[in-house]
Image (cartoon, helix red, strand yellow):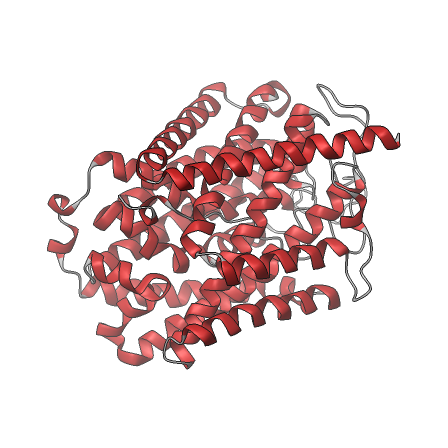
Amino acid sequence: MSTVDTMQIFRWPNPIPTVLPWGTMDGMDEKASQVPGGGDGEAGAGRDDSVAVRSMTVRGAAFLGVGSMVGAGIFALLGEAGAVAGSAVWVSFLLAGIVATLQGYAVAKLGARYPSSGGIVTFLLQAYGRGHTTAIASWLLYFAALIVTAMVAVSFGSYGAALFFDDSVVWGKVLTAAVIVLVVAVNIAGATFIDRVQTTIVVLLLAVFAVFIVVTLADLEPALLAPSTYPPTVDIVSSVALTFFAYLGFTVVSFTGGDLPDPHRNLPRAMYLSLGITVTLYILISVGVFGTLPVDEVIAHGETALAVAAQPALGDAGFAIMALAALLATSSSVNANLFAAAGSTRKLAESGMFPPVFGRRAWVGGTRGLTISAALILVLALSVDLSAIASLGSVVALAIFLVTSIGAFRLRREIAAATGILVTGIALTVIVLVVFVVQTLRTAPQTFAAMVATLGLAIVLELIWSRIRAHRK
């Protein structure tokens, strides 16, 4: 495989007001006063369940998850995944779906036990306390948020340029920058309207995908999906670390725990419903695309491969419909991801784990964490190759979820989780991570070095900030 073969994509969970993974912008949830298993008394971000408004339905929570997962992953991923798994991408999606479901079990149990808008940071604080593990993981989460938002913004620019400007590279960059700036303005002004239209957006996207699946399966060429065309098994397993990206939005469901009635029962139901819909959708879409187009064409078209696959049956109208759906999905995802990055930095600044500058108000509105994040995202999106962005985010994602699952194992009695399921999820994640890292070291040592450097940067930032924090105290 080439360097591009091993470089893939991470997706930060999409927060949708009023359910935000890191708390609302206008009043972050108070931290719990104690952290089981350690810490110094400042703990996880958790909503006070006694006063929470239980207004979220199971369907609404599930659609938040579906919208997060389907929002941009399938559009941005097919070409890159095909470079690794070939026509066996559907197998990769199936295996990644199994891993995601096992991870979803751990997250659902944690979210049901600790219903909160604090998301993964809450779970890490509950499992590990306010130590270096939580802080380093939080920095990695922030890096991943920047990576995925830049990646999705680039996808928006690619689709916009393909639809309106004949694939102009210059216009692609202009649109990429424009969507980031526009989303910053939306975040500053407030985006509560997203909560009202989210279900409508998801239903529309699912309807578009349903039409796409029907027409592509009708024109399917079985020879394109023959097992004889599959790459070596090790490449398919390695690609699971890449296709897993498309499922990462499932964690947004855990952030609805403070709004769901009876979250202990309803949060897992919403989690599994969202994953079930998404796994089925991804498998059918990948079969339709790779059963219609040769692998080389899918790779060549990259982010627009899904729209191109609709052309034989629906003509130019099919391309336009899929491209517009991609613009809608990716712009919504950029908005949600930046909302998450801004909210997370404010929450972590409030807890003392990030420098306080991230939580301060900016003169343009919003927090300085929002403007700092937007500036970094612009730099990444306009100056770094998409595949390089993707690879780092993908491995960080798996590593963070591995740490979260281990945390769930440590709290398995408190969250009433089945040890066997947790261990299986941890083992499969380790296998995928090890295969991915080994393949990356073998075929793309520069990418491996970048992964190590990213981890090193998180460690250095935590050590520097912890010394500064201790000195101030």
